[in-house]
Image (cartoon, rainbow, N blue to C red; front, side):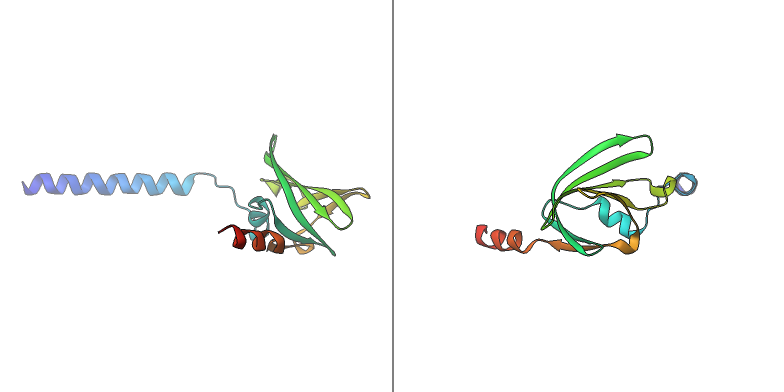
Length: 129
């Protein structure tokens, strides 16, 4: 009986060792905290990009050669814009691209701040509950 217990323990330890080794050696996508927050934006979230506040109107996921690209349709007091974010930004120098009526602008980590949900949405939710 004791011999069986030792074999089970050894087998379990061997399995755990294999699991840890495979987890450690697998390539993992590593993104900055800012990129991670951008990849998880939702409709009605607000972001400050440079000097303009935008509200996320919709979100579209597109497969690209670098992984997944998210395209957020944004609204601001100056009009509509698109924010494109790559899931694997290691192949590009900037975090995202902002397309407005004035052209396309590269967005870097220092250019963007997540502000959270819009005030109107938060107010409407309180009334719906």
